[in-house]
Image: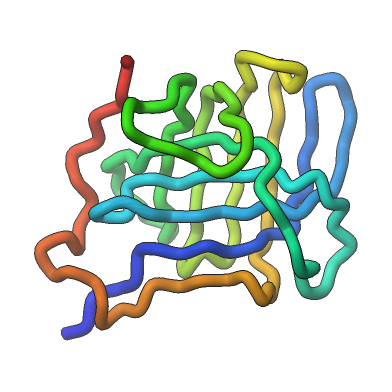
Length: 162
């Protein structure tokens, strides 16, 4: 039996709402990676989203990191806990954003939602997001045949506190 793909890089059309009342639509880049798909990076690109396919040349400007939580997923969603610290040995594209909160990833990375707060930099404050995957030439989806059967399930979630 083929295992489900866990790694990917996709573009999402996101609606972002901030505590100060500001709202915007922006292209995000979401990437799931790690030995068992335990990490999720959410990168703001600074590019306004207008619908349709994501434009060429999207680049991560600022990136939050989340780690998979072992929770029941009755609605076909995975829950990731955002990290206020970058664990030792992990490098991200773009500037790391210290963030607290959760992100929910729905079946086959078709959509994501989340809420939290940024705890550093000029992006301080609470936010909420709703995002839908869009066609993008930079997309990468890990082949299900390449998945290691021993790593098919999530590992124990240990939130780094270093």
